[in-house]
Length: 83
Image (cartoon, rainbow, N blue to C red; front, side, top):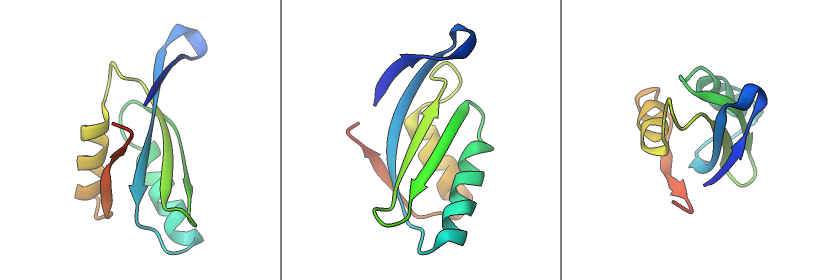
């Protein structure tokens, strides 16, 4: 996880999550579901590695909440990488 400053002075952080997605369609669904979560600013998934790069506002969410929300949405999610 890392910290950075975003537009409008918002405090941002980054986390990498291992997420099961077997195709581009799965990638789209994972990215869409991540972006819908409160506090998520940006999300992208590398299908080959199964790792999602998520930029979020730590004042609004945190990695455990992201993992739990994605699991509730039916995705297979491992623990945050580097956490």
